[in-house]
Image (cartoon, rainbow, N blue to C red; front, side, top):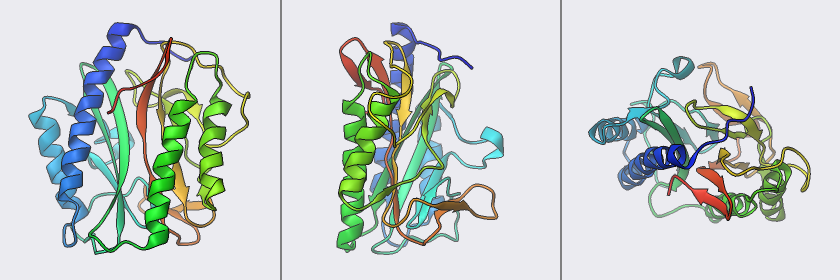
Length: 250
């Protein structure tokens, strides 16, 4: 499938979807506390997406059952909200959300500490993962390459002794949740497809405190670190403009 370049009008529609996603994520963040379940977060998100007149992007996608992915501690991505998953002081939970407005998708993720007493190395993992996302976004401009993005992310992560997940990558986005191109969070500067004005991509570093290897649990969705180490995930939907990156999910 070829890369689809978006018009200014289409990017504005994606910006509206992106605003919904951001508003939902910030609302969910305010509900993350010890004793809450990941299903509690799901219910908050589902109600707010409906109240904003948007559609959830994830629910029903390839059979996925929920509007959020909630991945706790060593869960990397695609954790399914559950009333059995009770958040505890010192946990971290990554919350991934997508929404559709007027047929266009927005997609973003944050990782949130639970309570006040988070381990120093875990707090560092969150800071570094978010910083790596910012570095990847800063590399976005016409004529830059996908390798420039991946290299920028990877350098930040590995300079702090963490590792980038290889099995899952970012992606193009538009009238479909996943479009071309794939956007790895690792790579060589100057290599890969060149970015063009009108491309819209989701950049989403998934970073492990230990080794990069992951495996998928029996539910067919939840990916976890193979070594049981903590994992963090941050994501933004970004348009390539003549002047650089425009973040659509802020």
